[in-house]
Structure formats: C-alpha cells, structure tokens
Length: 140
Image (cartoon, rainbow, N blue to C red; front, side, top):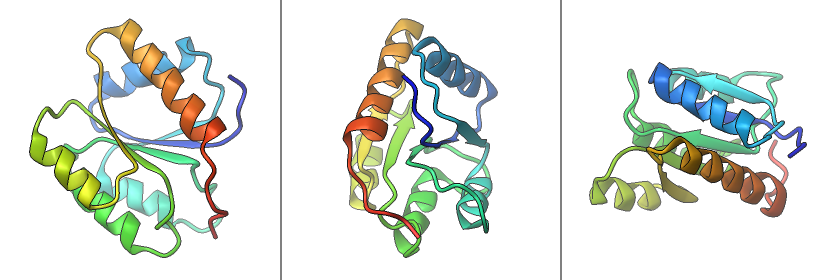
C-alpha cells in the first residue's frame, strides 16, 4: 500500500513497537511511521513547529509520563489537533478503558491482536481505512 500519509505510533513497549512496525512492513504499508515512546513525547511531536502532522495517531493507553487517556484529552483540547483521527491501539481488555476512550473523543478502539498474522491483517485494515478511505479536514 503506497501512501505518504504519516502515522504517529505512540507505544512504550519495545516488543509491541517492533511487532507493530513488522506488521506494517509485512502488510506492505509504505506510509512513514513516527514512533513516540511516551505520552509527553507524543504531545511534543504534535506541538512541534514544522513537523508533518500525522494522518492518524495509533495510541496505546498504558504509557509512562502521561497515560494515553490524558494524551487523548489534550489532543482533543488543542484546536490544532482536535480533528486528528486517534485510534486507541491497546492490549487493555478493560471495559472502562473503551468507554473512557470514546468519551474523550477516540475515533476507534482496537485491541492488539496477539497472533502476528492477525496483527498484520489489523494493521493493513487500519491503514486502508484511516489513510485511504477516511476523509479528514485540513489541519493547520
């Protein structure tokens, strides 16, 4: 899938990061991927001057420094990123995390598949929908 729209992957676990990057590669996702390894780093990236705004943020919930729900809250509170698509991509099985994620404005909630083949399929579908099919407003 050739696509030059940027993906911001917010993931603190090195194994999950590697798994996600391998899944995108195996799924032939050619979009550039920027990795933020904690919530503060993600927000710093989004606030940076002259950085490419991602087409979608894949956000883990369990993050150091600033958890994913607070990152989501701040993304939705900033006029520059308010309309940015955010997909919560997490291993959390807590119903409260699903409810709170949507309450704070998540566009989607996806549980990380444990099986690598399923993860590749999920990565391909995420990119197909969020980077090719979905229409978003032009962000500042």
